[in-house]
Image (cartoon, rainbow, N blue to C red; front, side):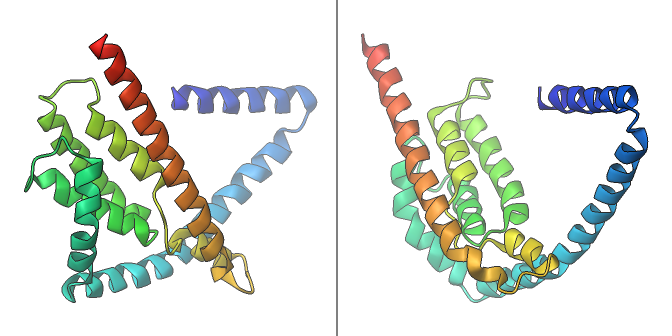
Length: 197
């Protein structure tokens, strides 16, 4: 669906540009944006490599394991349908810790693995289970301590203090996570009550 929306926006833009005689401006904007995208991507490599290196050190030093142990009781309460010791719990914990450090690129593969495991638990059905919905809500709104990607973009654009965004991000993601969980629980209990009637 999203792809259709993008295609519709592009086609509409080109048609309007042709009708108003601004095709040259559209071409210039396309090439300039492509150049900026490459510049931003290359600039982000350094900061991502730095944080991924720190994550590797944290993993080898046992910090991630400690964080996983710290979050385990919370995760067990959030995902009561997942049995103790199931691989999905490990992937969910890794996904949450990676998101905590703002490493969306590292969190995505673990989130996909967690979703695959949860789908197996759901008997391979196409309908999402309670745990799958909860994971999606947490993953989308996840609390972020260090917004690595945003810091990298601010550095690329010459921000005098690129880490100014840390406090705001922590507050925003904290609030969004609390609301996401409240909405998740609200709809779950509402559907449960309807099922009992």
